Each structure stands twice: as C-alpha cells, then as structure tokens.
Amino acid sequence: MKIGIVLYPTFGGSGVVATELGKALALKGHQIHFITYSQPVRLGRFQENIFYHEVAVSDYPLFEFQPYETTLASKIYDVAKHEGLDILHVHYAIPHASAAFMAQKILEAEGIYIPFVTTLHGTDITLIGKDPSFVPVVQFCINASNAVTAVSESLKADTLTHFNISQEIQVVPNFITTDEELPRSQPERRSAYALPNEPILCHISNFRKVKRVEDVIRIFEKVNQVIPSKLLMVGDGPDRYASEQLCRTLGLCNRIIYLGKLRETRQVLELADVFILPSESESFGLAALEAMAVGVPVISSDTGGIPEVNIQGYSGFLSPVGDIDDMANNTLKLLDPEQKQHYRNQALEQAKAFSIERVVPQYEEIYLNLVSKKQS
Ligand code: GMT
Image 1 (cartoon, protein in one colour):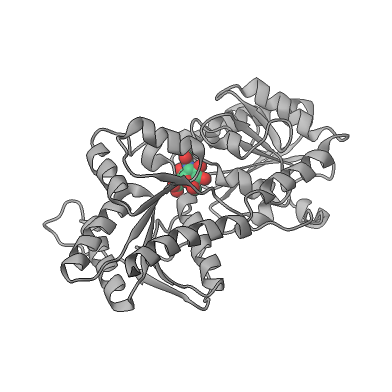
Image 2 (spheres, rainbow, N blue to C red; image 1 turned 30 degrees about the horizontal axis):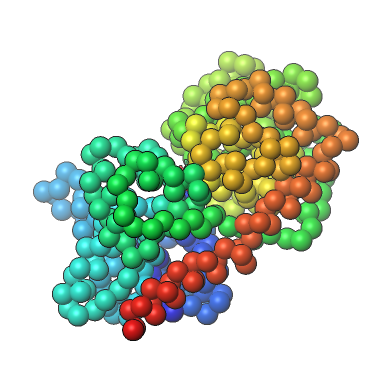
C-alpha cells in the first residue's frame, strides 16, 4: 500500500510512534510518505520505501498566526493526488484530523477517494483537546474519520467521556522492538556517570507540567538518602529550569545529570536500574515501555493508561499521583540486590506484550479493511 503518515516531527511520543510505525511498514514493503513541517527526529537515515514531504509555512506579513492547517491540508491533497496514496494515517487529532478531512473533501470533488485513520495519542484528548474552544472541531473530525484508534483502553474511555462519539474506537497500543535477552551490562560506559555500587535512576520526558518533573527530583532525594545514587534526566521543556533550581536548593547537583534532548534514548536506558514516570496524566507511557524493553523496571503513577503497561509488583510499581514517599519506597524495593534481577527479567517479559511484531499488523489490518472497502 501507499500510505501517507501525518505526524509531529518533534520528541513527543506521538511522533515517535508514527515514525517507528512508518519505518516498520516500509520494511514490510509498503511505500511510506511522511508529511510534516520538519524532518522527524527518529527518521534519521535513508531507508528504502520512505519519502518525506515538508510542509513549508509561508511567512506572509498579514498573518499574525501562520495558517499551518491550511498549508498542511494542501500538502496532503498534493501528496495524495500525485503519489497516488491508498490511505492516510494521521497521528494526534489536532489539527491533523481536520486537515485530513479538508484534503479528503477537496480530493472527493475531483473524484478521488482516500480514507483516513486518526490515532488519538493522549493530550489531544485529555488536555488540549477537551478544552471547550477545541471540542466542536475535534469531535467532528473523530466522527468523520474512516477509522479511529486510541493507544489505550483508558484513552478510549476518556474520549467517550469528553466527546459525543459515534465512530468506533479501536485500541492499538504503543509498540517497541524487543530483544529476547536483556542487554549486557556496560561497566565502562556506566562508570562515566556512577560508581560501580551506585544505582542509576532515569527519567525521560518533554519536561511539561503533566510530567511532574519535580516529583522525580523529590523521589530521588529520598532514595539517595538511603542508597547513594545518580539520576539521569533526559529531555527538555518548560519545567527543566524549575527542576534544576530544585536540585540546587536540595544540594543534589553533583548527583543529578541533565543530558538534554536525545534522538535515541536506548543507550542511556541501558545504563539505568530504575525508570521514573510520576505523570499527572499519561494515556500510555511510551517512555516507560522503552525502559522496560531493555529490562529497566518502572516506578510510575497509577494514572490513565499506565496500569495497562506497568504491572504492579511485576514490571515495577504504581502509586497514586504525587505520592512521593510510596514511589521512593518502591524504588528501594526494585534496588534490593536479592530482587533486582527478577524485576529486570519481568520488565522485559512485560514489554514483549507490546512487541512491534504484534502491534504493527493491527494497523495494517485497519488499512486493508478501508482500502478493500474503497475498491469494492
Ligand atoms: O507525552 C507527551 O506529552 C507527548 C505526547 C504526544 O502525543 O506526543 O505523548 C502522548 O502520546 C504517546 C504516544 O502514544 C503516549 O505514550 C503518551 O503517554 C502520551 N502522553 C500523555 O498522555 C501525556
């Protein structure tokens, strides 16, 4: 199939899922056309069957706000028509679903039919999407999509709660490439950050309010009082400054290392003993799954779709949002030398439930269904 994928190219989870999906589909022989405003961070090197179409927003002086959605709809129209796309898959409803709808209507007027799939990722529903100023458009476009998927049962339930939905929502979870075995330990690379007996804790996010980055620091402070440890902070965003200020106030600067944004996080995760995700809301928690896939157990809040990914007492532990004491105590359980290896093995086993081989065919089936309806 010739598949158009519309995505955010940045470090957010929806862009990572969309890019990895496109790469996996290209390896299976599908022709993939990524449509977005800059090169997706996970796209990287040249790969057969992959094409990238940049949406270039003009800088016309009349516009205080550049009309990205209009430019995107025009680009979708252009790529769909001239590349002969069979199907379009948009990731993150705002404004991708409405741009897809607009392009679909323009093509329809020219006698070309292209179905589109909308994947809901999280904040497009749970935060920004349910803002009353967005509801009419988001709701309309979900219902107008030819198929809709959500990344967890929790996100599906949230969508049905906040919007009046007539369209069926299928749950297709985030996915990951998993190895059979745990990665080998790497004492040399590890020694750049910690002494051999110091555990390494890790957090990866876009440092937005919803991630509760200060909780990560406070959990670390408590763990570090019992077992001297190190904390690797990966990513960047609005709350980084406040979290760095907190490290300084707590006198922990020599123990907490900010690595900034990284295109690939696997190598850092391989050094970690525990991953911390204390989010206020999280539709799935791809970062936690990426940690589990290299055998790093997870300390998380028990919110949104996280309990569908992180299993209590197996791949890690879950606590109520903001319960720093419980999260710190649970971290110490994961670091117990007698138990550590069990949790590592179990984290990897749990990640395998979300392997790329299991999940990507679910999207292919959705596409095939729509494409075969189109032909009949
Ligand atoms: O985490 C973010 O804020 C980024 C956001 C996105 O859409 O780019 O991530 C959401 O989508 C991911 C991929 O489906 C999910 O794994 C994340 O849980 C979800 N984030 C939230 O719900 C906060």
